[in-house]
Length: 215
Image (cartoon, rainbow, N blue to C red):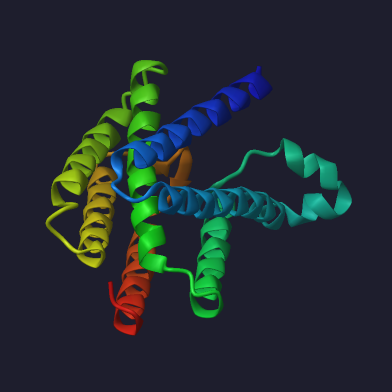
């Protein structure tokens, strides 16, 4: 039963991410080659993130891993694994930006589109199918962010749009934390301090990249 429940959750996340990717492909005005390149880059990053999640799971349960490596596979991923995955993913993108000339702002614009749509679909499924009342606040937040994103897309530069979305998401999640016992991202519980750190690092990367290359 636990395995079936875990597979269902993985399926919901996969469906949500796929919806985000399809939305990006259909709704953006980029040439097809650029769309495919951006989706390929994001998909590669998602695969790396999943691998880093497993690495974080090993890190969080290192004593069990030493005595019985396979036993770690049965343990659910927790917030520690999520933090480790975010940290290593950020390091990879810093490296790619510096040494492989990856356009961080373009990547983040793609990521935000996919993330917002995937989060909306995920919370919608949680609310409608799983009758999760906690998803209502998230659904309202992501609905507002999506509407703002599409309305401002043609009016703001990529840099300003990304910053607006970062600010909106960060303050929205902190607001939810005031009346929810915990806050989550695709089922992973996270702390308010992590949102603040993520916001500061993301803003720093955007400003640094903008000053170096401009967009």
